Amino acid sequence: MKILIAEDNVVMSHVLRFNLTRTGKFVAVAENGAVALQAARQQSFDLVISDYQMPVMNGLEFCRRLRRLNAYRDVPLVLCSAKGHEIDEARLREELGIAAVVFKPFSPREITELIDDLLAAHA
Amino acid sequence: MNQSTRRPVAAKEKGVTVIGLLRSNRRLGRRPDVDSVPSALVDAAQWNALFLSSDDALLEKLEQRLTTDGHSNGSGIWDSAVNSLSDGLCVTDSHGVITAANRAAAAIIDRVDNEPLIGSNLVNLLQALTDRLPSNGQPSNSQVRDDDDNESLAPRLLNVSQRLVCEIRRGTETSDGVLRVTRTLLDWNREADGFVWAIRDITQQKLVEEVREQFVHTATHELRTPLGSLKACAETLALSDDIDLEQQKMFCNLIHSEATRLARFVDELLDVSQMEGGGLQIARQEVDFERLIDEVVNQVLPQMEQKQQKFERIIPPKLPRLIGDKDKLSGTLVNLLANACKYTPPDGQVTLEIVWDRSGIDIHVQDTGYGISETDLPHVFDKFFRSEDSRIRHSVGTGIGLSFASEVARLHGGRLTVHSELNKGSRFTLWLPVRE
Image (cartoon, rainbow over all chains, first blue to last red; front, side):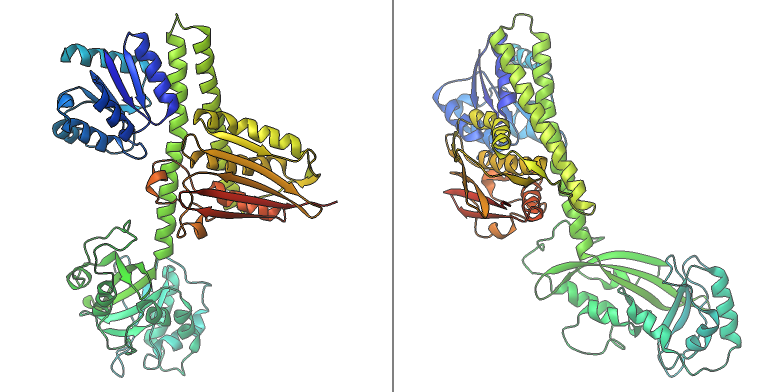
């Protein structure tokens, strides 16, 4: 299983990569939405995790553009956001088919379990 | 008798004057000399005044004196008092036509023409002020909350409810602002005869509130980000039985650098509270500058390595003796270097260069980063200033660091200056005097 992570916070991407790799996934990390979009065009991923606030291209814009790519029309998308940024979860689910919104700080165990569930459901 | 107004006592004499006793929630200065007041109040024809007090007993006495007292030769003291207020005070009839106004009202209302206030309609004047707002939608100060939109003020301002408080936006030649208008019913003989208006310019207050809100927002973020990382790293370590030594070390290093970041932010908060509460205090101690530089560099090096930036130091073998505040100088230099790292893309370069002679020492922090635009440049040392540049807007910061740094420089008898070019980089120079 291949997972793409768009996250500008180096510590968070380390932690995510480590925990997901340990459960047997291949993980690619991109530091912003634009880099992630390029990675998504070059290879295929089974699931994409994106941070909401990122430089150059933020998570929302990245998810929008990703959905326009044929190969990513229904790949599970997980959006991470800091608490206090009011995001309209229902609208995101409807508009972009976001599978889950995870609020930081999240527990690595919870997120790996969530990813496993999403991948199993999508398989 | 309602809560905010007492039965007014005075005359409608020679056409215009309204005099009243108003129960106020605020005390207006010193408790006045009761005996000197009534004659002045009664002299309605010469000046327009309201007597405000929160002291019921005093109002009672005045009322008695007013009804029994005959005539007076007037007294300028109440006139002066009302005119000394920084809030605008107006008395109008029930249609908003002004029958009395103090000096501040004239200044705040800032009429386009120089028509006298008396006889003009206050609601129309206020309406004219809001109409002067930039027509292209919202003014820049969009945080302002309106009770309603400013389309038409008349129905809102002239309704007959007892008391009305609202904020209206005001446009002027150069800027826009906010007025808080408090209106009280003036009920002579229990009939609504008109209104008493207090108008306060709260533009500055609004700006302060806005800045404070923004600060709390960024501060929360600054605290939460490293905390989230700490939590995630610690939990990963705790949950992994099969983690190898190398990886353990990596997570411990991450925890260490995030904890350092958190500690630095707490120091910054302390600086803010010191700056707010009467200024920074600078210790005067001998500073071992070579050691200070080493400590500072060790603090910021991990961040630069993380971003794969090149760090160069050009430091002469011997540095001068310096008297100053070691911790604050260290904080200042860490801040300049951390900024250089933060606002320079990965693979860029940060240079720390020190040059000194007998009069002083120049510490240059140069980067190959985003640079600062000409419009932002004059404001980089302003407290809480944050650039709107899209490349850095996502990054969190409180807008404290540089204002603190320049204050520290000033208190050491030195100065902090900046040269910057957009897309090329910035060069901050801290100059400190050397005392032989």
